[in-house]
Amino acid sequence: MIFDTHAHYDDEAFASDRDSLLHSLASHNIGTVVNIGASIRSTQNTLALIEQYPFLYGTVGVHPSETGELNDHLMEWLKQTSAREKVVAIGEIGLDYYWKEPDPKIQKQWFVRQLDLARQVKLPVVIHSRDAAKDTLDIMKAEHAQDLGGVIHCFSYGVEMAREYLNMGFYLGIGGVLTFQNAKKLKEVVAYMPMDRIVLETDCPYLSPVPFRGSRNSSLNLPYVAEAISQIRDIPVQEVITITEQNARRLYRL
Image (cartoon, rainbow, N blue to C red; front, side, top):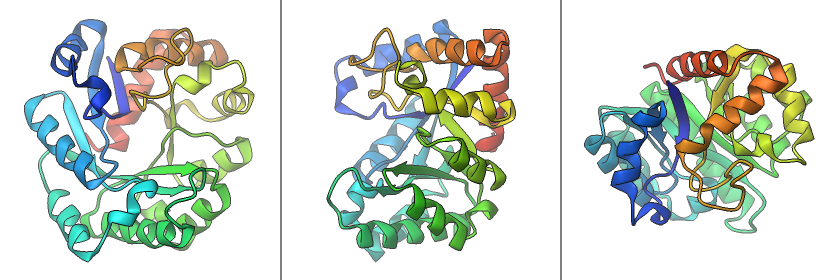
């Protein structure tokens, strides 16, 4: 069954139909979903969701754009919650220079602290990197992130950067962007990388694949991503689904 490695079902976009949508996933061949913490509040909401739904797992962490809220007390809270059953990673963490706030110095500080947290609790990491290719890679190398393992979520760079992360043992998260007409670089990456390092993700409610681009995304749209990978790699869709599920289970140690 399809494994969605990166979703945000705690988002307000799902407020009206969250329960019915989540209960419908199994009948559409969606077997497992990891809901991602992106702030303290969303991490709290994620912890509640994974208690409610057997097929949902979660991560704890603070997205770079939300790192202005962090302090030592909250870092200790993240450490404690990371020990909860069904918490499978620290994330999403990293750098995002698309937005002007918070200052890159603040983002870097808490990126390093959260990488260290992952090391302490022996969990893989979910990395967010937007318009920050060099700084993200430099920090991950300096902090020996290859010892942690994890995934580069919504991978958006070219083959050269992909090679760096693959050499570090990371998985690359591939989602709806692959179906976009202007996704030439990402298609080259999917053609280049080994199949045993690809995982499927939605980042829902964001980044719906074609033909639903611009509307609310959900795990129900992942077959379009699997189909795009199957065409690029010239292998059956079911093989893509099987391999990426196996990859996701290795990534999250399930």
